[in-house]
Length: 233
Image 1 (cartoon, rainbow, N blue to C red):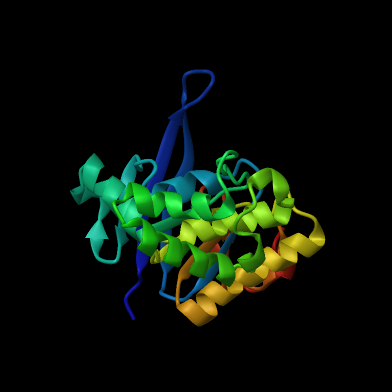
Image 2 (image 1 turned 60 degrees about the horizontal axis):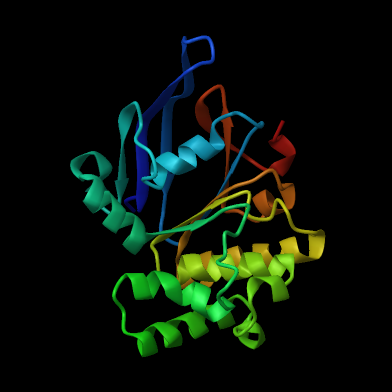
C-alpha cells in the first residue's frame, strides 16, 4: 500500500550561533499510511518540531522531497502549498491558540468561514466535530470558561473541521494533567481507528507513544523505528 505522507532524504540545515551550518535533519525517511497513528519521540532539540514543520508544509527542507496524497511539495508554489495545508492537513500545538473573544463553536467554524463555506453548513460541521471530541455541551462557552483539557480538545476540533487527511500534533498534551491528557489521547486513537485519519504526534509522553501503531525515534538527525516505549532512551 502506498504511503499517504512520504518524506525522502530530508535534510534541514540552519545557521548556528557561531555562523557555522547546523544540520538538524540528516536524510530523514518517513512513511505514514492512511489511518495510521505514528508517534515521533526523541530528546529535546533533536529536530522533532522541525520535521513536523517540514511535513506540514510550514517550512521547506534544505534538500529532499515530501509527498502528500501524491502531490510533491517541491512542485507547488506558495499559494498551492497554502491550499494543501488548508485542505489536507490539520495542526494541533502544545498551546491551543484559541480566539478568546469567540465561543468554542465560533472558533471551530472559523477555518470553514474563511474558506468560504456558508454559515449554516459551517455551524453544522463544527457542531459535529465538537461532539466528536466530547464538547457537545460546551459549544457556547468561550475559552476562559473551558478547562485546559477542554480548550485543547476544542483546538483538536478546529484542526479536524475541514476533514484533513493528516493531523500533525506537536506535544499536544504537554500542558495537561493526567486525566485530561488521557481524554485527548483517546481522541487521537479514535481518529485513526474510526475515521482513518493519519495522525502524527511529536511527544515526550510515553503513554501516548505506547498507543501508537509505530514509534519513531529521531536521533542524530535520522529516524529509526523502535519496538516499544521500553526501547526509548
